[in-house]
Image (cartoon, rainbow, N blue to C red):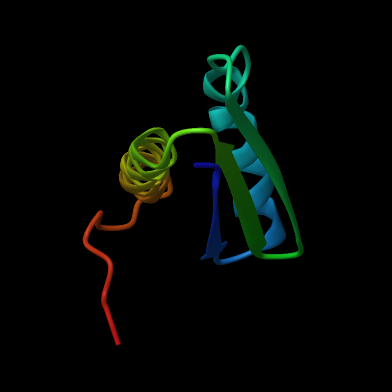
Length: 89
């Protein structure tokens, strides 16, 4: 069964989106057979499209992306002199 998942991330700015894209680029190359990962977006929005022949593979890929984005957030905030804790609305 093929599956397709879309993860949309709203970021603080286009600069943050570009930084995130460059950090994740090496991880997103050479994906296993049967898995397709593409990115897009504009301005401060980044979109990840995960397509897989296996739903568990698609889900685990999205979870890995979320972990990587969370780590990026912590490192980016700390490198800009801001606390890593993000206030949630």
